[in-house]
Length: 320
Image (cartoon, rainbow, N blue to C red; front, side, top):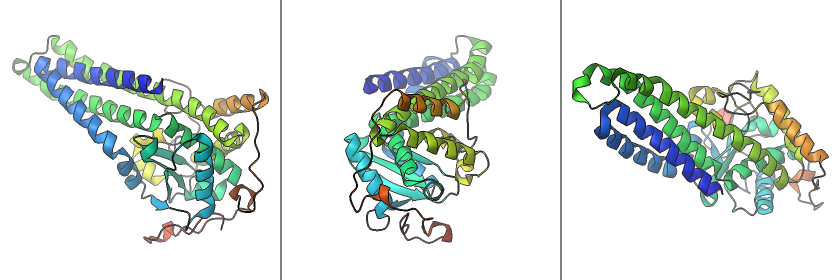
């Protein structure tokens, strides 16, 4: 079902992109827009993960340099029936996390150093289970390509202003009305669709993430902490890359968010209420196995990552 939804979304966004091209330059403009859209989709498919990880200066970690955090991801991936993703940490005092990658076999999950220092291991498990749910639902690919096309439609809308002064050189069938549609209506429609899809996928990932980690209240507690922090702890990389805000579990630029047409995330209180209702409805609340090396049983201390010292070495490992 997710593949069908993804295909329908990409078809709609590509058609909207072509429509903008048609309004700007007639059939010739439409074909040029189609070629550009195909090229951007292909580029996003293969390069989205590297681009966003690079934007946040994320460093890959493994079982040697972050054994407890890595073990949490490994156990969650096993619980979800997913291949083990690559695991990254990035330096930010704001607790947050995101997932990226074109498919479950080529996925990556990333957490901030602030997430590991501010949240309990159980809450971290809830957050990372949410990110693995995005991977399992292929939301990472869907939202990356959607954001790419929405940005491209806005770019074409800006170009429409310059083309409008040269009406004799294009075949726009609607004249100045077509230019206005290309400049205003199409970018607005693309943004609304992008935001609506993003909000829907967050609710779905919350529910699936709670199933993966076994306790909806872990994620509910984490969401409250992250939203409160996002409202007053800055994320400078996110401020420089606002187009990536939809990728995070909580919008790093606004915190709580609102359930309206132009928000990237649902209202955090609504998400928490849904998870609490999920717990009250009788969902099985699991407890991690009581083995000696279980990271969920260990005490937590602030991780010494080395990321804030400008070094190139991987983080030393959380809760060590």
